[in-house]
Length: 225
Image (cartoon, rainbow, N blue to C red; front, side, top):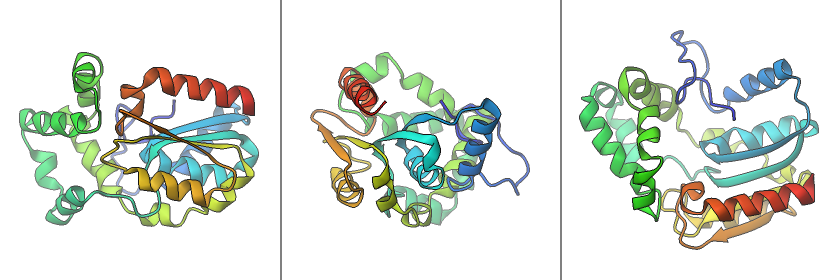
């Protein structure tokens, strides 16, 4: 798993000249793959990873065996109206907000991304909150992630060129963050792509339907491996 530079628990660059935008993450990923000696990949991306993986797959198609996109950002599907308003108002107050207030706000935000809220609370919710909270996580979320939310990064991806690769799209029918219309637009733009819409499934599809996601991935990788 590639944790984007400056995101989550990865290293946070203090040098403001380091490009931690989703476009800037592509050469970082390529450099890591060179370091690891990996040249034959099945790439799976979710959410903002959809702003990195397709660009990488277009630029380095010879390294990609298949591409799976799960409830990803694309075209001008992001940021949301609420996030746009936060960005326009300035993110520094959110960086400086008390930890308790921050965690309460984002707990509700994360719960809106699933259908099975009780299971998320009992399993992964605190882990997600820990990634984006505290003295490092809270600042990193806004400075290295939300601050880079810009559809220019995805509007310039040549999605039609992904037709040269096996591509699978998996989407939650109840995704309130990236509504299913975007899945159909990607499907119509990427020649030969497969599309699976999952019922009773929100944006965090892996949390709502882990068994179904696993089955789709195993089947796809066996067929395209």
